[in-house]
Amino acid sequence: MLAVPLLLVVVLARVLGGSADGKDESTAQATQAGASTAETATAPTAGPTAEVAPGAGKKGKKGKKDRPEETVPEETVPPEPVLAEPTGPCTESDIVATPALTSAAGGSDVPITINLRTLVTEACTWQASAETMTVTITSGSDDIWSSRECPASIPPQDVVVRQAVDAPVVVTWSAKRSDEGCTKWTEWAGLGWYHVQAAALGGDATDVQFELVAPQPGVVTTTADPQPQGGKKDKDGDTAHTPGEDGAGNSAG
Image 1 (cartoon, rainbow, N blue to C red):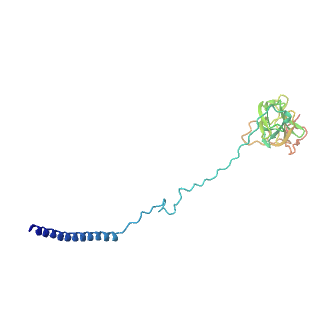
Image 2 (tube, helix red, strand yellow):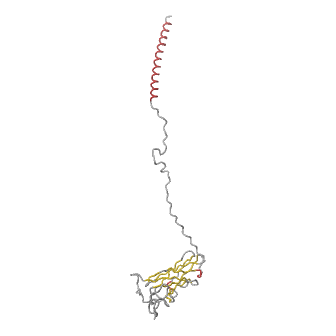
Image 3 (cartoon, helix red, strand yellow):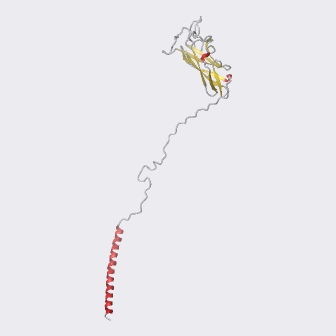
């Protein structure tokens, strides 16, 4: 019976001691928890991380790389015209021959460009030679030179003659008078105004006036009279020489 009261005392003592321990423990936990809470309340809280927009912080350069570069327009070059292709041989009466000469130096060979065009046919083939075209040089009523007497002045050559563009053929005049057989012993043409006529055989002739002028120093390879007496031609191409002299100012007798 004595053991039962003793056991009650021990149990009571443990209960009372456990309550004290529990109070202290809970107070300690509360204090520790309060400290943590206070620290948490006073500590600065970091807000949500802000997203940085592309290009931020580069003031004044926004969109510079994305802007298309300005291009300078290139000059527009007009395309070259398409030339007509020849459809067959030319008809000689369809060809117009026009000399391109305004002045030339006397005393040496004179190249004369003859521009060929067609009247009707857009393009055709033709052989230019002394047999298919003629070139003459006159001074008034005085015949000075002719390709018929000097056929070597027009070497045979195949050309395409067109209606839209010129086909050039070069005829060489010796700057002398011509004779039968085109000898080299004829007189030099004097300085002054002349007419050159060109035509395809069977076609109409074209007449152009030009002036034969004094050669430049160092150009003349053959002796020529730079200022023949009475041999000067007027601008109309009429001979201005005295009777008994030819168009070059030389004696005709």
